[in-house]
Image (cartoon, rainbow over all chains, first blue to last red; front, side):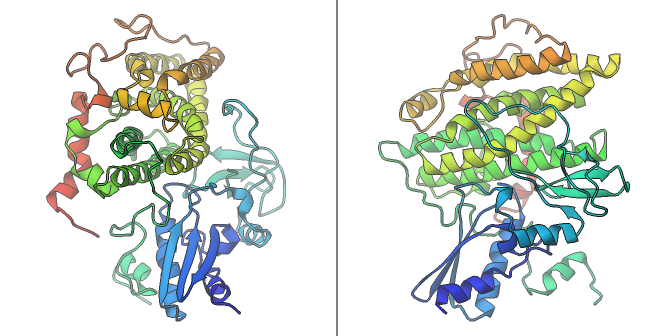
Length: 166
Length: 306
């Protein structure tokens, strides 16, 4: 196994500090791991520009790789292309649902012209992670982290978080 | 287990006496290619990054002041999230400014070390809100304008600006939806809530003209396809605002003394020299109070990290 592959295996296990059931790989923010001689370069994408977790993740990646014996580690930020919730892996979606957080549906596709204004509240088709009912409604467009909003299930009355589609 | 403080519990595993919300981390543009595009003066690019970065920083600060004052917990969360998105954009843009001008100044140097006259934000971002209706009016105007701007900036010839814009579009589209939905709710609520919304629009109206007025720096960079001429945003802005107001059965207020709203420089009723405005570093009285708080810790403990 190459140096880069071994480093990737270590980096891929780093958890998201705010969604600790998910790894950076599950979340789709681990963009690339390369090796340049003994030097390992890890590229990460922020989910949201202001997400404070990215700094924690960078520090975590460096720490774990250092602990695994990689002497020289550099963590790079990749801004473009911007992260999309579509990059959350199937495994990541399964873990989110198991933790009571509804995974995102497909990210909105944009046509030509100005960004359309959305005046309807919430989206349909968000499934309750507790009982599986699709009869749910948005209660708040923002939540405890930048990447989620809040829904409530009309069938079992359970409130739950949902990862926003971006 | 058993920790004396929550901080200790967080720091335990790593043994690292620092965590995500402290300072002293490496810069936000680590590993990003930050070469200034050919044919563009670094000083101009830096000035432009400060304009867009200061808009985000100052608007973010005003939003943060709403925390513990919003009408409902959900709205506090919303305003905190919007403020955080804008703070993230400010961080990247100010860091970019420090690279482009060759000074190597960090985003913190710009945010905490400059005097009022050196800030380049539009006046709209710095004023205080009389109430929640005032905030919603200001947020709708700001996010509608900024979204139109960022959307065009995605194709800018500067790769950092283009990347910040592409990411920002997704965020600010959400902010605009939030403000528009609240405008409809307030306008369609009680007579009182509708009255507050009308008053909010009237308060913000005199500050709109500045958003579409172009500085020399913007004009030059727009010609080099690095910036957006704000005048080109007017049609999209007008059409979005009109569509929201139509649904709310509200009319855009007549701004007294600014008939036609095509004033190039300076807004009536605001302090500051005639012919100058926020983009030139001339701000309203509110800006002094804002900076005093924003910079208080950094000025009391120069160079401090935590």
